[in-house]
Structures are given as structure tokens and as C-alpha cells.
Length: 219
Image (cartoon, rainbow, N blue to C red; front, side, top):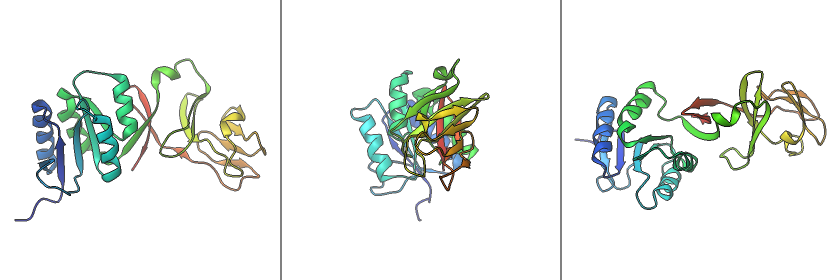
């Protein structure tokens, strides 16, 4: 009999996590394997214990070797710094050990298992702040800038396509950012080019606000 096409790989020895992950896998029609079951397999979902020695390094390696897999990390207690580090290392979902099964089942059922997330800023850092809120240099998309304008949070590419200047160093007027070098203008909510000399617009990233953070999401 051939092996099922879809697989959940467990890199954890936590019995609570294993039980929850197995239930989620069964409901979604995934087989379950451990690190020794099928060497070289290409799993759809990987569940990792972030508190094992080298847990974050394991996530980084798995993200590089399994770029299309959903990476799920678990911890025993809430730890915002560890969660942020794990998400930026490549985890699509981080949860407490007792919540892994339920949250994983929700993701699989909703069809968002393969949507990658990269955390940009905490919601708490947006409170009472308008205009340019943050610059983040180290993302999978290069430099980005976070704006809070007219009640809407936007994350845009922070590089002018004309000559590579950092756009967020320019003047913001309403939703319009003016490049400080040559005067090109863009809408920070849509990325639309409003005035040259730039010939094209900039990327306005899709975001989701979840778990007290703003994330860039992509498929």
C-alpha cells in the first residue's frame, strides 16, 4: 500500500502536543510521522518543540529545507520574546502546548495552513501613534515601513523603485509619501505611484492582525 500523500511530521516528545497534533492530522486526512519514520520525506506540517536545545536553530533549518511546509512551534508557557523569535525564524504558528492541537486543527480546517506570516510590530506599539510607526530592515521582503493613517495600518516596501532611496525618510502628507531624493510620490495604503520620476508603484504587503501583532502574510 502506498503512503498517504499528505503528512504531519512530529519533532517533539511532548505527549500532550502529540495527542493534539494527531487529532488535528486525523481530521485533516494527514498521516503522522516522527523524525525516524520516513527520512527524506516532504511533510505538509511540521510540529517542533521550541524548548528543546537548539529549538530556534531547528526552525531555521526546517524553513530552509522545507520551504512549503507549515511550521508549528510549541512552548510550555507564554513567552513573547521566544514567540517573536520563533515566528521570525520561520514558524507559521506558535502556541502553548495545550493549545497546539486546537489551533492547528483550526488552521487546517480554514485552509490557511500554507499562509506564511512574518511579525512586524506589536499592536501595543500602535496605540496613540499616527503616520510612520516603524521601520523594519530585516524581513523576507527587504526593508519595510509601517504606517498608521486614517485608522488603517499599512506595511509598504521602503525603497523607491526609481533610485533606491529609503521612502520613509520623506515627508508624509495624509496617505502620500514623497521620496526625499527625486520627489516621486506613492500612496502608503495601496502602493500606487502618484507622481514620477518613478515609473512603477511599490509593494503594499498583505497584513493580518492576530495574537496582538501585525504580520505580513503571503501564500
